[in-house]
Image (tube, rainbow, N blue to C red; front, side):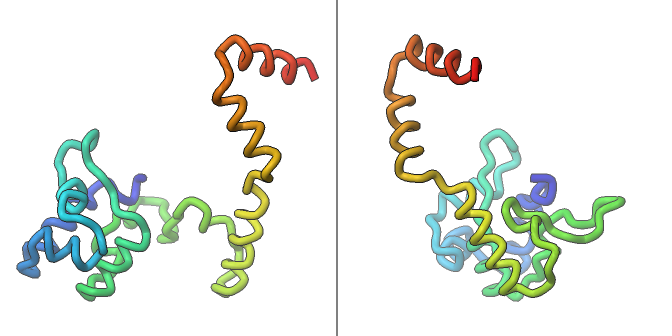
Length: 139
């Protein structure tokens, strides 16, 4: 999450400059206050990050440009924010990009049969899992 490396400091600065409490931000983003506090933690191992919806809610409700919160000015960076699942489209048309995203989600979605196999695989003993993996590896 390279684009969120300094997010915690930027969020705190914008929040404090706007005289907003962590509770105010939580209400704007539809999360609880402890979640917002986790976004501002200095320790990266304990720090949480907002989802795209929460991030956009904050930007819209505070009229903060997204680039003020994210690290987008990396040398050699073309300025394109790459969010997982959204960077695969070559189209500038949002409806085309959304259709491509839907097709990609459908492609990776497990069928009922695959989900059942995975559920059973997870529930079985480690010896059985090893045996299944050996059988599949020989194919």
